[in-house]
Amino acid sequence: MELIEKPEAVRRRARMPDYARARRTFTWAGARAQMSGLPGGRGLNIAHEAVDRHATGRGDAVALRVLSRDGAVDEVTYAELRRRTDRFANALRALGVARGERVFTLLPRTLDLYVVALGTLKAGCVLSPLFSAFGPEPVAQRLRLGEGRVLATTPRLYERRVRPQRADLPDLRHVLLTGDPAEGPDDGEEGCSALQHLLDAAEDGFTIPPTDPEDPALLHFTSGTTGRPKGAVHVHEAAVAHHATATAALDLGPDDVFWCTADPGWVTGTSYGIVAPLTHGATLLVDERDFDAERWYDVLAEQRVTVWYTAPTALRMLARHGAEAAHRRDLSALRHVASVGEPLNAEVVRWSAEVLGTPVHDNWWQTETGAIMISNFAGEDIRPGSMGRPLPGIEATVLERGPDGRALRTGGGVREVTTPGVDGELALRVGWPSLFRGYLHEDERYRASFADGWYLTGDVVRRDADGWYWFAGRADDVIKTAGHLVGPFEVESVLMAHPAVAEAAVIGKPDPVAGELVKAFVTLRPGWWPSDALHDELIAFARRRLGSVAPKELVVDPHLPHTRSGKILRRLLKARELGLPEGDLSTVETS
Ligand code: AMP
Image 1 (cartoon, protein in one colour):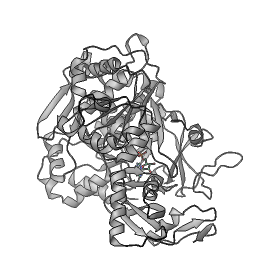
Image 2 (image 1 turned 90 degrees about the vertical axis):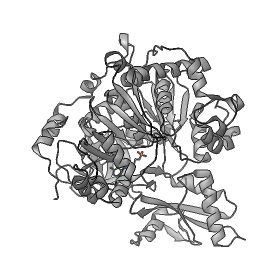
Image 3 (image 1 turned 180 degrees about the vertical axis):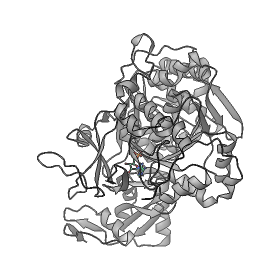
Image 4 (image 1 turned 90 degrees about the horizontal axis):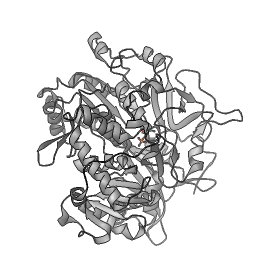
């Protein structure tokens, strides 16, 4: 078994120096006691834990350090963040937005995103962040499902992603715009107003209303194999898990300069891109620009980043860029590097140990779990290629699978795999604070995610004899491209809206950098014939509607495989793509 051993000094300085002991002694009640709670015992509010509680004692500490597009570096203290988020909460009140109503963001990383996110939580509204590279259809569908009342976005994104579907969004009352007004609608048009005007007009000082820890706080959309996106609801109590897991898995504390590169539209970008670093009172780097290998190394070196949370795709791109760029910089401040969202290959862990001076620590979790569940820890050795072990407070297991690939449910419930190295569905014992509390409007789908007190994750894993977890794949057909979860059904539905397409099937095709890329197979309606022009037209059609989750590859295939009941077998298409055995074909008809 390959092991990357940690030197004694590294073990000792870790915030969780003894994993076995932490597992024995950790309690969620103890983790809850780390929160301050709203003054006067009025409950628990994420924004109070993230902002206000530091604003009194450590108001001058830097909460956000914003690296703006033009190269300027602006610092925002906790006191200033309090003032701005108070104003935004007051602005929502002035607009008549009620508690529990949903405020969506479709924003790149800018200071306003953090002000809107945290001000929304202060006001008792529910925050739903969207990925800013989504096209108009995914944006509109999520706004509709979530009955978005307010949307904060840029004039440019409004024009391109929202305006085309505006008539289908009757619940959307207020669009708050930040960015160049010349690129968007006029003030007042279609409920649009300039965010800055609202902030200027709003009062200073806001008292967070009593907040039940079980009040909904966050709504994150995620994708399944079938049907529409699922809206996972998280509550204010989730902050307890964001905070505790950031200590255990990210080695994060108040003196850190923390950089999370996740887009704010995905769950990592909220739990660890906003909440956890601020509940710790750390300094959070906000980088407005996109990936660029040389610049990223500059950021790590010049900003003296101590804890870095990023994604395997980005690390693979850095590794391709060559070690010399890292050697030219002083990365001595970098203490802990972690990644999440997709399988982390063992070579990247080794590369990081050599080039960055510390191995990457893989973490596993998903939208529904709200926080990191399985991790490689700062004070523990690493088995490259393994996702690690469950966090203190988290009980994981592997469940036997049935013919549909998911956990087998027999009359007596589910059965755990006891033999090491045998794969099954990863399940987690219910009972941690950031477990989702429902799929919006979909109780049946929610209930189906649980069996015998376990939450069923939909991932296939193996556990070795020492209790380390190894990722094997998804139990369903969802695709992970550059760390982003894509529901094949959503992509297929858009392709089928094109008049040439009779049927569509979408799979994840393995890719050395992005993990997987979205590949579509279509059959054509009578009267249409394959051609380069049609191929390009279909790709462009999908791209206009879906944005960055559109297929990168598309082939016309008149023989898509079906089950006897008529469902397309993506599993078989994928096996063919990989050149793998096609498995048990007894339920398959090739039309
Ligand atoms: P999301 O809900 O968008 O965060 O996606 C969660 C999914 O990403 C999981 O169910 C896994 O399939 C995948 N994933 C997350 N972390 C890892 C990891 N460390 N290794 C492999 N797959 C991962």
